[in-house]
Length: 400
Ligand SMILES: Cc1cc2nc3c(=O)[nH]c(=O)nc-3n(C[C@H](O)[C@H](O)[C@H](O)COP(=O)(O)OP(=O)(O)OC[C@H]3O[C@@H](n4cnc5c(N)ncnc54)[C@H](O)[C@@H]3O)c2cc1C
Image 1: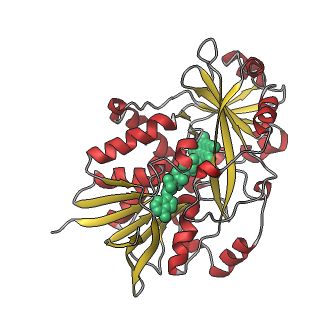
Image 2 (image 1 turned 90 degrees about the horizontal axis):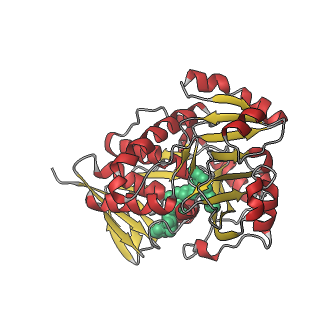
Image 3 (image 1 turned 90 degrees about the vertical axis):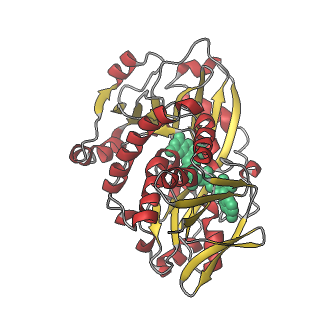
C-alpha cells in the first residue's frame, strides 16, 4: 500500500503537534507548510501557561489529556531542550466570578480533575512573593504549570523532523484545491500540491484560506501581549497565576525573570489578516506595559523593583461560542480544521494534535468532541457574527 499524503498548513504549536502525532502513527507522508519560520505566529509569543480548569466538559476532558501529554513530552523531548514546568497553576477569583466558577467544581469532580480551594492567607503562606487581596479565592491546579515556548516550539519541530516530517518554511499556501466536494490538495507559492488529506492549522489566517472554497468560520481575532521583567536576584518561587480579577496573568520565566501578560479589553477585533500579514507588525498600545505592571503590582509587589524588558505581541482568536474548532467539515471531505483556541491554544496543543491525528488515521476520536465540531455553526449565524464588530471585552472571557 502506498503511503498517505497529509499536508498541514501552519507551523504553530497546533500544526506541529498534529505532525508529531501523525508521524508516530504509521504509513503516512507528512508535509508541513509554514509561510514564515516555525512558531512565527502566536505560538512563539505565548505565555505558555497551562491549566486543566476549563469551562466545558469537552474542554476539561481534552485538557486532562493535554496535561498528561505535556508531562510525557517533558521526558520525550528532554534531549531537545524542553521541560514541562510543573509549578501548578493558581486561578484567582473574587466575588461574583468565584460564584460562577464554583458551579464548575462538580464538573471537575465528575472528570476527576484535581483542585484545591485556598484563601488569601494560605496563598501568602505558600508563595511569599504573592500578596492577594483578603477576599481573593484561589483555585489551585496541582497538575498545571507552564512551558517556555522558546524551548518547546523548536524542540517539537526538531522531533518532527527526526520522525520524518517534511517541514517547509517560507512557503505560503494561498488556496485549497477541490475536485467536486472533496479537498484534494492546495496551492502553495503558485504550485498545486496534491494530498489525500489537508489539515488547516493556520490560526487567524484560516478564513482567508477557507474563502477559497466558500466556507467560513465564525471566528474573531484580537491583539494580545505579554512581557518579561529584567532578571530578579534569585529565581521566583511562584506558580503560574491566572489573576482573573486583574485581567492579567504571571509566571516565573527562564533566567530568573517574571512573565506578565494581560488583555486590552477595549481594543476592537482586527478582522481576518491578509495572507501576507506578519505578527511582527502588531503593537501593544503605548504605555500598556507600564499600566499592566501597575495593575499586577498589588499582587506581586516585587514588580516595583524590576523593569519590563521584552514585549511580545500576537493574536488570540475566539469562536462565536468560545470553544475551540476542531474536526472535519462534513460537506468538505479531505479537510480537517484546528482553530480558535482562544488564549489557550498553547495549553491545548498536545491534545489538539492527537485528536487531529486520530481523525486523520481512524476518522474518529476516542474523546467525544462534538462540542468542537466545525459543523456546529449555521451559515447564517456565521455570517451575522462575521458582520459584527466587537471589542475583546464583548467576546468570551477565556484565560488559558
Ligand atoms: C501574547 C500571547 C500570550 C499567550 N499566552 C498563552 C498562554 O499562556 N497559554 C496558552 O495556552 N495560550 C496562550 N496564547 C495563545 C496561543 O499562543 C495560541 O492559541 C496558539 O499559539 C495558537 O497556535 P496555532 O498553531 O493555532 O497558531 P500560530 O502559532 O499562529 O500558527 C499558525 C501558523 O500558520 C502559519 N500560516 C498562516 N497562514 C498560512 C498560509 N496561508 N500558508 C502557510 N502558513 C500559514 C502562520 O505563519 C503561523 O505560524 C497566547 C497568545 C498570545 C498572542
